[in-house]
Image (cartoon, rainbow, N blue to C red; front, side):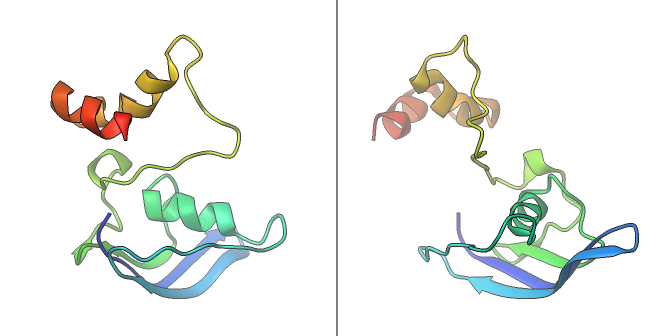
Length: 116
């Protein structure tokens, strides 16, 4: 993925602030986990990073590039949903390679990456 930097990210639904002043730096190769009770904002934070939710204020930077208003399809981020949002008519292999295919990755590279 590269690096991720969140600068004072806030997310509100009306008057309800669900993310308040989130500051986070993740370097390439680091592995992090968000834990907490249901409804504390974990999914909202991940959706905001992926661009599936707009942040109310603050910045999301990926590899040093401000992607705060960049559409999800242009961020180079994938999100695996808890409910296994898979296409039932596709094989596991095809589901795994779908994002790469949509990003225009050559077939040979998709085959190599999915086979790992």
